[in-house]
Image (tube, rainbow, N blue to C red; front, side):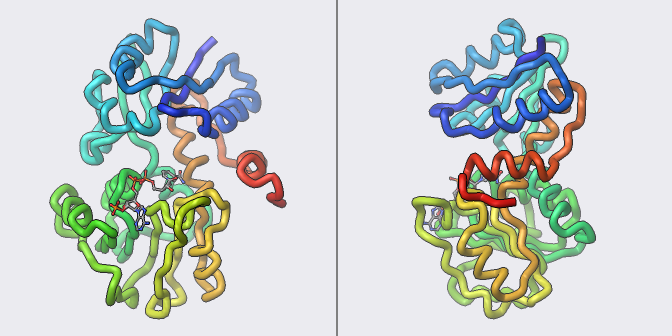
Length: 277
Ligand SMILES: NC(=O)c1ccc[n+]([C@@H]2O[C@H](COP(=O)([O-])OP(=O)(O)OC[C@H]3O[C@@H](n4cnc5c(N)ncnc54)[C@H](OP(=O)(O)O)[C@@H]3O)[C@@H](O)[C@H]2O)c1
């Protein structure tokens, strides 16, 4: 029986087991996917012994996404660019790392706006943390024209320009001009349940612009409601969580699963028991 897991510290909140066990049942695969709490001081030995302990791979979440790089045998180009990983898989007893968050974001965007072509687009991205890096790396590969990065700590937006090059334009939220923006993305934790809401003036944003939020608790954030009320096409964050899981499942279990409405409803209901499809 093939087994995989998600590791983090703490890990009790992770919804990844719900997603992967849904796919395992759907594809009638004799496999398992569990949560494993791994303390930071045990991360290296856990990953070094992954294959020996019978795992075909694992997901890696906070606080290990960056420190895990030193404990795997091979990192792909996206992991090297971002400096973080979220998926590890085993081949010939060696560990390989990739990052699927950026692709998960893009696939979710395409699921909501199927005719969207990233090439040549101007992106405005709020936030400069781990998920921002993964999304930037993916959007640059998809040949966007520019990515304006707005962050509370301005120096972190400047760091992203140093890392990813001149298409990254650090900007200040005060006097932010959105008139050339094709896609506005929130990657900050503002608007998440228990956090301060994201407050932004959208009056200069063209109506044709797409507005995405990667926060998925609540399922529809106040920021997305504000954008919907102005007539924008909106992209909620839960789909990113589901789409980023596809690649790991395929690498571990050899079947490419689908993100279906049935899966969306299952996880949405877990997040919000009042959720109605
Ligand atoms: N949908 C998905 O699959 C998915 C995947 C990953 C993450 N997420 C969600 O995305 C959010 C960010 O995750 P992350 O891993 O990128 O976090 P992170 O690395 O800790 O970065 C957090 C970002 O939010 C900014 N921020 C936090 N509080 C703020 C505030 N009060 N005002 C202004 N800016 C604030 C930080 O700015 P500073 O640099 O100034 O601190 C930073 O840019 C979380 O809510 C997470 O749950 C969703």
